[in-house]
Amino acid sequence: MWHMYSLDPGLAVLLAALLGLAVSGPLGAVAHRLPRIMEREWQAALRQEQAAAESPAESDAGQPYGLLRPGWHCPSCEAPVRGWRAMPLVGWLALRGKCAGCRAPIGRRYPAFELAMAALFAACAWRFGPTPMALCAMGLVGALLVLGWIDTETGLLPDAITLPLAWAGLLVNLGDGLAPLSLAVVGAVTGYLVLWSVFHVFKLVTGREGMGYGDFKLMAALGAWLGVAALPWLLLGASLAGVIVGLGLRVAGRVEQGQPLPFGPYLAAGGILMLLAAGQPPWLAVFGR
Image: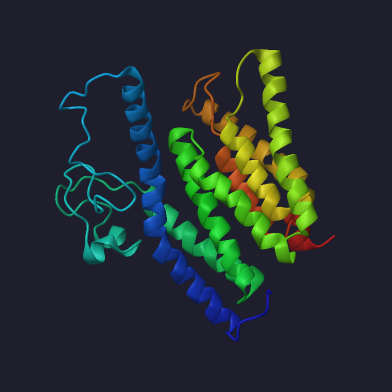
């Protein structure tokens, strides 16, 4: 199943980087819009439950909002972004990080996201070669970057991404792609149960919720992709990174004591590292045993 395409590896890496740039725009739109779509759906459901009449200001009639509509536009002046201005990275650099209409600054997270997508797609092509597995790895990386962005900004890990991602991992491993199917199934179950147990023990001891259910589902998805053997290293690395970054933010005065921090970005980053390290601890993959 995972046969090689007849393509030069260097060319494959270059094409993968270009593919990463090409899809970074649509995936960035998903990361930006999906939480807002979810919020609108929650508000509509709440209004329906309360049987409250919508005021004109609250009505969404005539204002479609989805992943495709409205088109890309400046959030400040709502000027449409078309043509070369919508090209990932190129548009931001040419406009010097400002809207062409109102000159409002365009956040640096957009070019950072686009660069990360290009670099990691290229890394997948380098790691797996010109194979179907490289394409599967790129799909996983794209989903993890989107989830990391959403969780950082909103504290959410949407089921619309985490659940299909878990099933996709099992499908990829039907042919023992990244792990034997049996270990992928055990990894999905174990990943969910481990964080579920941590959640309930923490809540029992402190009376507070230390993480969300989206973290359980993301861990299950990573277990389905990488297999159960990768989970201890993944959880250890994500936890250490979360503690270090959290302490750094607290020392810098950017978070207050007791303020919850999202765990999803660290799980996503750990998943990408373990993917590129073929399920081994990254230092073993680089330096050998």
